[in-house]
Amino acid sequence: MKPGNILLEKYRLGEITEEEMRMLEEAYADRNELENEIEKLEASDAEILEMYKPADFARSIEARLPEIEKADDKGSNVHAFPLFKALRYSAIAAAAVLVIVLGFTFNTPATNTGNLVEASQGLATERIKGLKPSLKIYRRTGDAAEILANRDAAAEKDLLQIEYIAGSFKYGVIFSIDGRGTVTLHFPTYSGVAAELDNNGAILLPYAYELDDAPDFERFFFITGGSGFDVDEVLDAAYELASRGKSARREFLEISDSYYQATILLKKGAE
Image 1 (tube, rainbow, N blue to C red):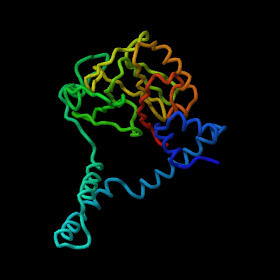
Image 2 (image 1 turned 60 degrees about the vertical axis):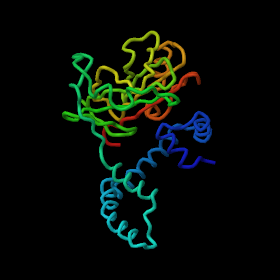
Image 3 (image 1 turned 90 degrees about the vertical axis):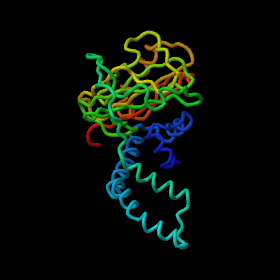
Image 4 (image 1 turned 90 degrees about the horizontal axis):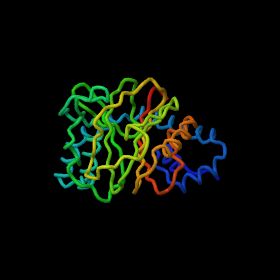
């Protein structure tokens, strides 16, 4: 029996557990069959987004707010419960793009002139305890920067800056795999021992990364461990994953369970 769409969707979003991944591997011995099922899901998602564009949906909710609140004020059977009020405003907010005003000039490894956003923004001044390691990607947009979510679109020459939250992990490596099968090491900037992480909140890397013309995707990985580990060991697993083509969009490194893997996928070009 084939697994349901929920499991396929988790695989597509890179949120699948190892146990769930084993279930998929048992159900789809032929990797091409699995990729075909994923492509069907993505095509279905595209159709739904075309029918119900987020911005249009938000406007339709906003247009109904006066009617809903008027009915609520009159004691109508149509009540705007507190939870619904929170959800409807969240739906409107979700349609907006989060933009951060630049505090410094955008920085690349070659020029090293400053940061995309101020290091003191967000959670950077707080000690984060109990959070899982995570990545955040900023993209330069004129004189500002926007946050790119998992599966957002990106393009050649986009300037990106990487931010990480280490949680309770002490060492880490950040790299990316692109649609051409290239592995790029971002942090540390050289192989050897994994970088010692700053556990005091959200930490921006002090340089930017410009996307090249590699097709299809760029997927960023943040591999963390409780003790120092060999960067080359992780990169060897990254090269192996990169050699598997589109599987690198969704699958994880085949490394010890003692490591934690966080990823963000950026899509490039038409799918």
